Length: 115
Image 1 (spheres, rainbow, N blue to C red):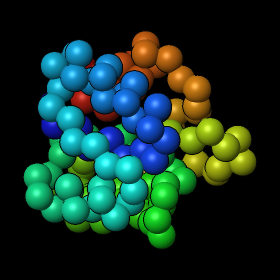
Image 2: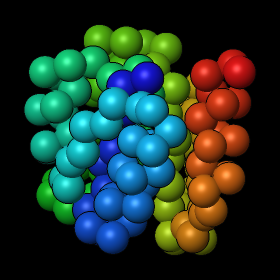
Image 3: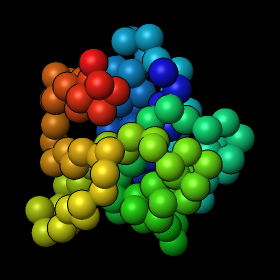
């Protein structure tokens, strides 16, 4: 599975990328919403993992909306460390509260992939 990881915190992005690559996924990584959109335009991912609050002017919500233009059914995992972030009812998505564990990330991916 090709996964786009949009996360501006280096440590979290590195851990998520490492977990995904270890489990056999192809990973594209972005440290801002703008970079995530560039990567999404280059090669449409099968799944988007995005922090809700990103560096730059775009949010994770914005990234998901724009990436889904080329693949409306693309599953999305939203991550947030802010308890006041109100989840939006987006079909085909899961919200993870930071910090989350390896098992929770893999469960979310399996759930969205229908495995």
